[in-house]
Amino acid sequence: MGKVAIIGVGQSRFVRSYPGAIRELVFDGFKEAVTDAGMTSKDIGASVVCSAPEYDKQRSPAGVFAEYLGLNPQPTFYAESLCSSSSMGLRLAYSLVKSGLHDVIAVIGFQKMSEISSSESQERMGRGADIQWESPFGTMMPAYYAMHAQAHMNRYGTTLDDLALIRVKAATYGQINDRAVYRKPVTADMFTDPDSIMSNPVSSPLRVGDCCANADGSSCIIVASEEKARAFSKKPVWILGLGAASASVNLAGRDHFTGLKAAKQAADQAYQMAGVAPADIDVAEVHDCFTIAEMMAYENLGFAEPGQGLELIRNKETYKEGRIPVNVDGGLLSKGHPIGATGGSQIRTIVLQLRDEAGDIQVKDPRIGLIHNIGGVGLYGNVTILGRE
Amino acid sequence: MGKKKDIDDRFKKFGTVSFTSTTKVNDFIDHMKNDRVMGSNCKSCGQKYFPPRADCHACFSSDMEWFEITGTGKLLTYSKLAFAPVGFQEDVPYSIAVLDYGEFKVFGRIAADMADEEVEIGMAMKTIVNRLPNDQLNFVFQKG
Image (tube, rainbow over the protein chains, first blue to last red):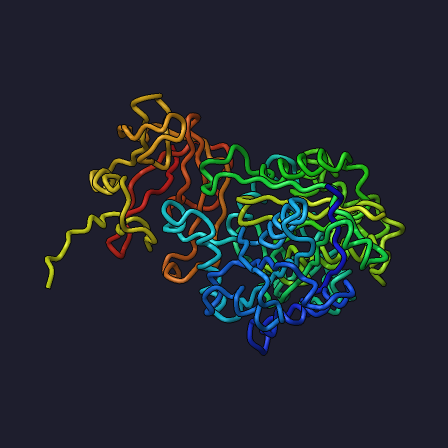
């Protein structure tokens, strides 16, 4: 069996409230990706639709999209692993191509979170945790990540200022990303200024500035066999490594709170499959749904030893010019987090980097890139390693 | 009209808002009414579980017995919420936390009457049954 490539990427603008229907939202990302691949809908053998379906009013959106995108009569089906749904979709697409069952797959990620109110959305996100034994206590995503921040700070001496620096970096690049929701500058001072919204408490020790925002958006990745990739693409990007793991949903089943075990396990698998080490990664996208999540990602991915992640951000080593550039598209913190679309947006950024087409955020001559995409509070971990020719 | 079936929905008493009404470990609620927080122990292989379970994933036995959470656990981490999801707004602010009892861990809330400055990672805490204003039951952690 030959290699498997990504030959097209697309994403919609991520916005707080998309003024259209979900089929129109996915059209934006799909059109860009299929055009990027030099294809039409007729060239797509099957589509994998990735989202957290509890936000939708439409039952089984995949069928609706297939019609709207001109994908009938090709098969279409759902992939769901909360916020890492589209990385899981990529994993499925890889296996469908590798098996020879299909030679071109569209991985379509989307979420229109504005279909429901913000508090309802928080409640649904909380239900991504253990609804029998945790949700009755009144849990929310920020609180779970805050528990990890509390443990990380206690164990390693990480400070609130370190976490603020991660948001400052995100905003540095978010300002120049025209697809991002949040494009204003953020300074470290804002986190201690009571007049700034950034300093408002959400769940101790996390503040508003430590949290990404809900968003509406879509993404699309075109995955192809080596033969199709050679026929259609001048710059195929190859899937070198895929890692995926799961962990106990109830935090009572976790053995520590200073990192995410599923992320570490997924990273180990991806590095092994790709035959590369953390030091070989030239550019990375990590799942910074909260500032602490990026800090833990540095350590779970081996960019820093456990407890040393804070040195990376203090020394600006994860900036564009640094040793290991991370989230130079602004990350979830700037782009917003339309759950099912997020992984595809991260993959898009790395593909554009490896094709040397990332514009203002282009890292110098990257050969190998990594995507770290997490579902729930480390319930699902997905790590993908991509390489150019 | 058919005869109305009796549904054992005791678990809807658990927490400020319960999202589960039927479970094979419904007796957990009866134990809470008697001020006991219980885990389950597999009679076949001895594996201890908290939260309690009806089935053992280690040996696939469903022959479980209850054991009471007694003594103290060590506070592993916590967070105090300034916002709450739908249905929990009346409870704000409150803190959620995890205690480590060695053989198992417990996820719950820190007792509302504990001052923030008293809470410290590593401290010994005990798990006790708590009666909520809306007549629901949960359990909270108090200084051990």
